[in-house]
Image 1 (cartoon, rainbow, N blue to C red):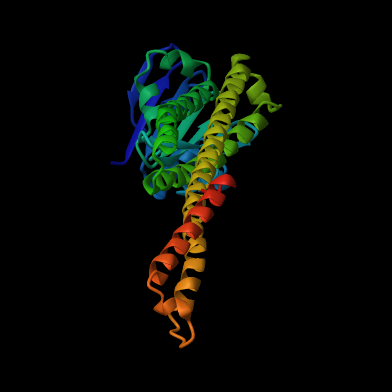
Image 2 (cartoon, rainbow, N blue to C red):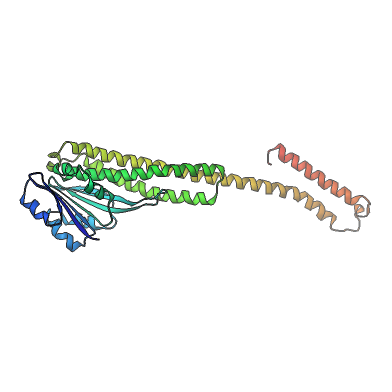
Length: 325
């Protein structure tokens, strides 16, 4: 359901919660601060509100795209942060993400999202919301970014035991099902790694921002930027580690499979090598030439079986000696 939720803190410190009607009060009070959250609105419904805050039309287009790499853009009087937020997660990296756009300035924060946002819901209920919003929308936007990053950390840490169990399974009893799971994990980890890299690079660029509106706000913002950056760097490191571990397990599975196949081929080769001389002897004595004395000899059949048995024993001894079996 499309909603517009607004939190306004006026110059007297009074907190008001409501809808779009509070925007006019914010415009009239230069010492007030506002947070406007747009959830699932159509473009024609959003445009009047977004124009109030003087947002650039190109970043508005970026915010409305269903898929866009995470990014940060700096303008003269506000900051644009585009995050890929986790909206669904499972124990085996079965996740879905959605765009969360944050437009933050010294006096306002405007958030836009199509799916339900856990970060938005958390801060709408947080007791420290009024104190944060009074310090400007930038600080609140950075806190939301940290909240979004923490959910990814929790998902990856919950996934680690599954990867460990799969490693033990491959060592004890490797099978194709484990291989399919590993391949699936690698695909999902590759997506996460690419996404975390976008986030980390974006917040790294924010560390060197010289914009007046950003420097004029609380010095704590700098520490928050570093905190967000370090969290996404950690996520990038974890996802890379798990991706490489999954790759090592795939390589190990292939090595075990090839080793088992080599052992099977070695046995089949030994059997073939044993039957080659036996087939030769059987072929010679199966030609039934007239002048073959052994054909009419009483013990010829038993002698041939003895020769065949001797050949088998000798070959088996040789194979064991050279460790071919």
